Amino acid sequence: MKNILVSLDFSTDTNSVISTAIEQAEAFGSKVWLLHAAAPDPDFVGYEVGPQYIRDFRASELREEHRELHELTQGVKAKGLDAEGLLIQGATVETIIAEAEKLNIDLIVCGHHEHGIFHNLIFGIVSSGIIHKSSIPVLLVPIK
Image (cartoon, rainbow, N blue to C red; front, side):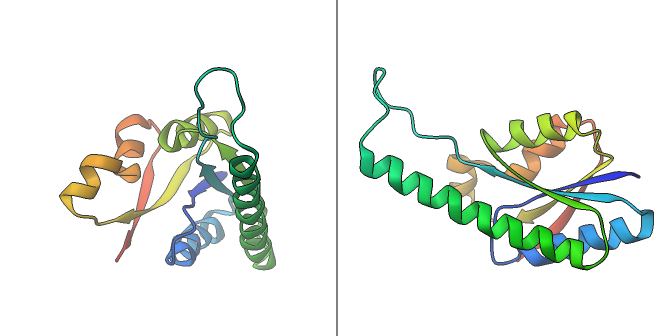
C-alpha cells in the first residue's frame, strides 16, 4: 500500500481520522494525501461573477481552509511520514473519487458521521457516496 488518501471536512473529529490514517501509513510505509474538497463557488445567474462581498467572503474561507490543511499536513510530516495536502473545489464525493484515481490511491480513509434522517435526505452522506462510487477500498472512522 503506497498511497493513502484522507478525506477531511475539518470537523472536531478530524484528528481521529488523521490518526487512523497515520497508523495505516506507518504500518505500510505509505504516503499520506490529505484532501479537503472545498465547496464550489456559488453560481450566479448570467455571466456575472457575483457581488464583491460574496467573493471576498469566499476567498477568506478558502484561505482559512488552506491554512488549516497546511497545519495538518505539517503535523503528519512531523511524525516522519511523507505527506501532501490538497485543497480542491468541487462536488465532494466526485472530487474525492477523481483525485483518488488520479493519484493511484490504495486506501481512502474518511470519517462517518451519524445524522438524522432529515439531514441525510437534504445533504446526503459523503462516506456512503464514496463507498458506492469507489473501486478503491475505503476505511471508515466512526465519528460521534
